[in-house]
Every structure is written in structure tokens, then in C-alpha cells.
Image (cartoon, rainbow, N blue to C red; front, top):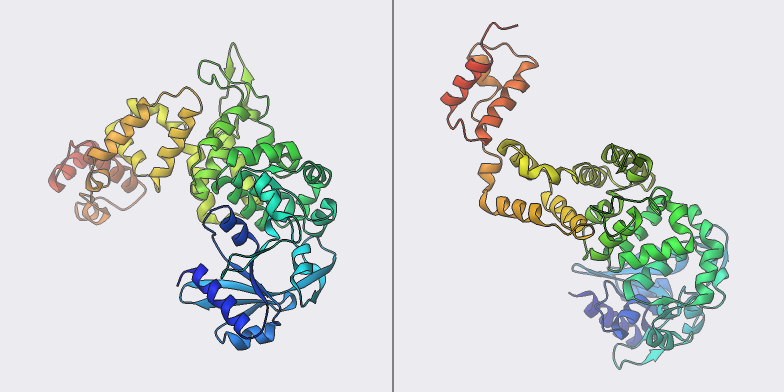
Length: 438
């Protein structure tokens, strides 16, 4: 069952039982904008216990806040009792909530006017207590009520305002943006996991360049990613980077992101993060060691933001390998094949494409690699080994560290197509690594 179908059924069931019920929040915003919502939420006058009675397979996910998760097949919808929030103490959750019988107070507790609308899915009627429809028409992100109060209640709203503006192509209403600027340092009191998730969504949902320009203008970029903010004003050699400094180059990459994976998006942001500390002028501008410096900085940033070990490893690999494409035309066949079989190589290639389009726009290497990938089947990129350690032991070679060197040399020759059989491989071994050598 589709989430929208489930949400409509929930609203109908609640209303048939004598309760008010409306679609609410982001799904209403997206439906009114002609976009496909990612998820659906329902607000109702029914109390949590009654919701669970009406939907036996539901479960309380936020009992204190009156939130019930209703599941059907693979679809799920959050159903929440109308409420007002009171006494935010930790910049995240209200200290207490009061269940209300009407939707007005429920709308007034929400973050932005465009998220405070309620919709009857049966006839399309909209409840608007906050001026959200007008702000949708004006393409404005505006805090409900006093913006400073909204941001003090939940500090993550500082990032959410940026994300909505970036994703939707909206402007942030001036008073709301000034409140973000006044309160920007509060974002440092939000958990790393919540910050990480919002940053990834800014990078992957569309409008990444706009999002990071707003983060910079608000002060949050320097708060959260000072290593990225340090890119501003770091000049680059104009013959390779006519686009300008490292920050201008990075923004051009972000501008070209098209709903990328989180790893590719973070690598696009961080691929040149090592350039500011590596900047030197020695006859010309140089960035010696910027890749190694970038990997170290990326590792620290990803740990700070609590990225998973798997995702961190891939992002670090993308940063570490992004300059290797300049060597592709001169690579030995074995080196090139090993490069092309890096895990998730498509992300490496796409980062290279974006990097080139954001600088000199010379795509010859990109086309060369694409051609190689098209002509090389998997068995030629990673052929089964011709010999193993057991083969060497049977041939009289004592086990030890030399085995790795021998097997690598054989694989090199295999990838170069200079050996093709196990007998050829052992002949090579006996030639290059004769028994009894020290």
C-alpha cells in the first residue's frame, strides 16, 4: 500500500469514528506545490489510546507527545493528537504538552508557516491558521509567530529553514533570517547525528549550492564546518581553475549535484578541504600534499558528525583518489584496472566529472575511463587468480611476507595479459623469485 493511500484511509477511519482528522505538515506543503511527498502525517482530535483502538497494528512511538505509528504492508504514517507544546528547556523537546481538541493550537506550535497547513484529502479543503498558503504563493520560508522563540524551542529549525529554502528554491523571510543570524551558534548545541542528517539532506535533496550559501551567510557554516569555511578566499592557479577560489570551485560542484548518494555529496563538499592548509606560493600557487591533508580533515569531520564507518571509508576514499584521474592516461594497464575496480567506482567517476566541469571542463580523461569501463568486462578487471599461496607452498616456497609480493606480481602480469595460464604464472614466479634467494 502506498503511504498516501494509507494516510487517506486513516483520515477516513478517524472521521467515521467521530474525530477530526487532517493531513498535516510537509506532505500538505508538497501536495499544494505539486510535489510528491516523501512521507505523510495525520493530526487528529483522537487521543492516543483511541487511535491505537482504531488501528490495532499501530504502536506508540512518542507516548508523551501523543504520536502513534500506523503501519500497513510497507507503508507507515505518523498519527498525532492535536497538541500545544510548553516549556522547551533543552532546545529540542517541549517539557510538557497539552492535548487539544482543535487544530489551531496544533498549527501554531509548528516551525514554519508552509509546514503549518492542514488538508482534507477527501475534498481538498485547507485549514490555514498561519498564512501558509500566501507564503507558498510568495515562495517564502517564514517562522510561525516570533522567530527567535521558534529557534530557541528547537535549535535544529535553524538548519531546517535553510534546507526548505534550498530544496524548494524559496527565500527565507528577512525577519526569520535575521533571527537565524542572531541564534546561529545555538546549532552547536544540537546532537551531531541530527546535524549530520540535515546537512546530508541539504546536499542530496536539491539546491545544495543555495543551501551552503545560506549556511555561510547565516554563520552556521563556520559553526559546523570551519574547515569548509576556510576555503573562502584561497586562490587557485587560474590556468587550472578559471572559476576562482576553492570556495567558488566547491560551490560549482554542489550546484551540479543531482540527488547524489550521501557519500558522493559529502565528497563533493570535502574533496578540496585540504587545500587551505596546503596553500603555498612558490613561483606559482601550489597545494602540495592537499590530498593527504584533505583525507585527514575529512576523517575528523566525518567522525565529528558521527558518520558510519562504512560511509566514512567511502567518503575518505573519494577524497583520497580524486586526483588520480590526472594519471589515468599514463597508467600501466594493471594499475588502471585496479583503479577501475575500486568499490563503488561510479561515485569516483562522477566526482571526477563534477570536479572537471567546475574547473577547466576538460572531459577527455572522463571519456577515456568511460570507454575503458565499457570495453572491459568484469572478468578482465578482476580475473580469478592463476595461482594461490597453496600453489606456492606446493612448489616449495616457504610461507612468509614474500607471498604477497609474489602474488601481486603475478596479478600485475595477468592484468597486463602477459601471463594467461597457471603454468605461465609459475614460470614467471621462478624467473623473478627463484627458490633459495635471500
